[in-house]
Structure formats: C-alpha cells, structure tokens
Length: 212
Image 1 (tube, helix red, strand yellow):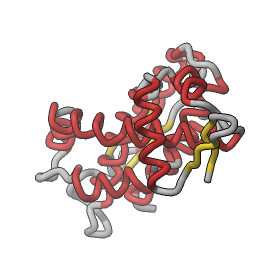
Image 2 (tube, helix red, strand yellow; image 1 turned 30 degrees about the horizontal axis):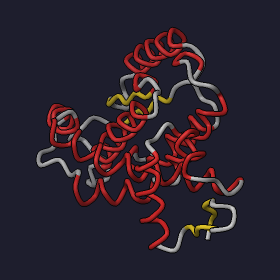
Image 3 (cartoon, rainbow, N blue to C red; image 1 turned 135 degrees about the vertical axis):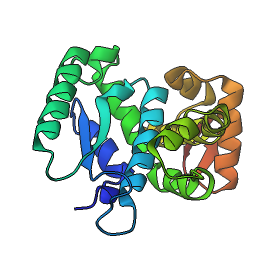
C-alpha cells in the first residue's frame, strides 16, 4: 500500500485508541512506484500531525516516518528498534506528558473532528513549493507556517472542544471558560460565531448555551 494512503485521520485514531507511538514506512522519496509521489503526501501529513500533537501537549516524537526501499530490511529493523526504544523512554501515552487520560481523549476527539478542515487547509494553504525532505521540514518549521497554523487551528480546536462539552449538557460562558482554560471573552466570541452558523443556541432562562 502506498504510504500516501496513511491519512491524518489514521494517525490521530491510533493515538485515540491508546497507541504510545506511530511509525510509518514509505518508499524512498523520488522513487514512487505509482508516480503519484504519495510518500510526499505522507510526509506532509506527518508534519501536520506532529504540529497538532505539539499543540495539545503530546510529544511529537511519538510519530515518525522513514523512507527506504523494499530491499533494506536491515535498515527497517534498525529504525523500528530505535523508535521502539524512544517510545518506551517517553512512557505511556499521555502519562509521559503529564496529561490526564480523560483530558487527552477529549483533546484527541476534538482534533479528530477537525481532520476534514485541516486536510482542506493543507491542500489550499500548506503546499510545499519544492519536493525534498529538507524543503518539507523547513516549510513546516517556518515562522510563516507556524503563525498560519496558530491562527487557523486554535480557533477551530476551541470550537470543536466546546461542541463536545455541549454534547454532554448546556453550559454557561463561565463554565466553558473554566473547563477549557479560555478567557470568557474568547468563549463569547466563539459562541457568537457558532450561533450565527446555527450550531448553538442560547437559553435565556438558564443563561446557558446548548447545541442547536
């Protein structure tokens, strides 16, 4: 199977299912068997996922991609053994980062719901101009991409988390801000936008927001 078919959703789902680390192996860059250069798509997804992991408090080193040919069995054994040692050193998922299991699941579920949006952003605004491993690393680590990611991702993540909270029960602005560690004015801004989009409604009697 082409590594380009390893979707961002698959990576996040693996962590959501409790895997301590995710390793992806692909054919060498520039040697795609399907002339689609799907391994570059996989590389892009890994960079994107590692950024997401960093934002929610997970160590990005839990996700790794390596490129090699089918004849390099010794190299595969070497890199997988190295990755296994590093993941064991990091400890169990979440616990090694000091994140409560329930909180981590909540964050990963909120992120997973953003996958269609993030894939659209990647396709339209995060395309690397040249194809090389170094170019992809430099692009995704650039100040410009970091600023864009911060601007686009954090707002969407906050709204996704709020929607998950409201699925359980109606909440006030103060309650939402306390649960997510957000400023009440930020929550109000997100709620006003979500209300205009028909996602939430405000109950005047209880002074709480609920799903529309």
